[in-house]
Length: 205
Image (cartoon, rainbow, N blue to C red; front, side):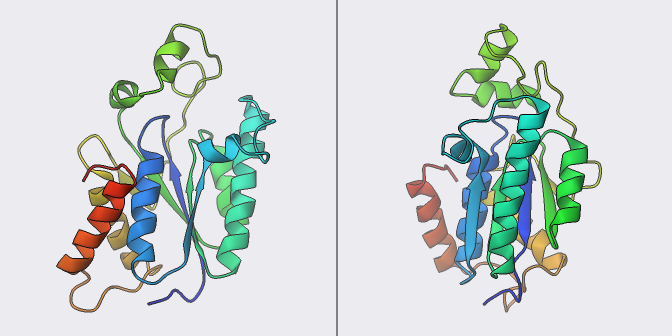
C-alpha cells in the first residue's frame, strides 16, 4: 500500500507528554503498510549540528520548529510521511507552519501536566519548578494548546500503541491513508510483529 503523496503529522504537547514514543509507534504502524515514513524528533535534532546552537527564547524556538517544517516539506514532496514530534508551544507558529506545508495533520498530545511531571525521568520539570531551568514550557513559558487539531490523544490512559492505532484511523477518515481491506483492522500477526517492534524500541504496550 502507498500514499499518492507525502504529508506531515505534527505532534505537539507539553514536555514529557509522550510525543516521541507516540511518533515511533505511529511510524512503525505506517511503515508496516509499506509506506515510507520518517520521524523528526525535536529533542534529537537539538542535539545535532542543526539545532545545537539554539536556545529556548521565543525566536530560537520558532527557528527550531521552522527547521522541522522545512525538513518535513522535503520529505513530503518526495512521497514520505513525515512525523514531527516537537513541543512547538506557540499557536501562531504552528498556524504559520500549517500555511507553509501543503498537507498538515496536527495532533495534540494532551497528556495532563501532572502526568508529564510524574513521567519526566530526566527531572527537567522539577528543576524548572525550582528555578534551576528557565524558559521551560509549562512552568515559566506558556504552552498554547491547539484550538482545532485534526486529532487529540491523551497518553495518561492510552499506550503509545493504542494512541497510534487511533491516529491511523483518524488519518484514514481524513483521507491521508487508505483503509486496510477487510474493515481497516490490523491482522493479528501484524499486530504481534508491531508489538515486538515497539517492545524492542523500549515502549510498553
